[in-house]
Image 1 (cartoon, rainbow, N blue to C red):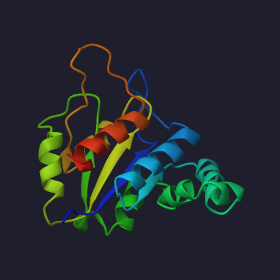
Image 2: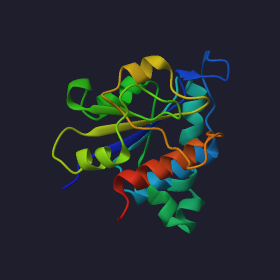
Image 3: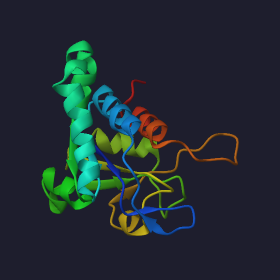
Image 4: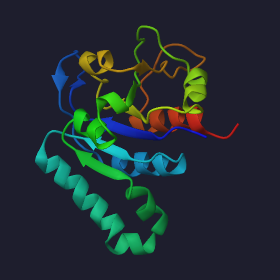
Length: 186
């Protein structure tokens, strides 16, 4: 038996290239591709976290088109994947939707090294046990703000290539890799 796993894509508080706090914009590709990864790997929910109402409304228009519009009729698999999308204004709202802070484990991802990272192998083993639902949090821009990292119960080890140097995956790629490492067939 595996624990419930949901994912969240945070657009604020996010770092920019200089380390400042910013809000990033919603992208159509992130809406679609993370929803498809969530569905493929059996995640219960995909939360898109954005503080700006106009951006949340944009997600609503995208998902409505694919769930209820002509595209949902043409490509039912996409409709099913996008049915997992939940749009919220804060990370706390996504945690509340899963049962509240005392009932949810928050795991974060980062391309930067964090204190005491948990390997994907250990994360996979934890997922296989009974316990609280897990919210796996991904960041946009240059990564999650330190306040988000500090508030997590667990930080997964960064995804790294064998060859050192460049390490700036798209969040779509990082999400797919992380979910495969945690929930993929072996």
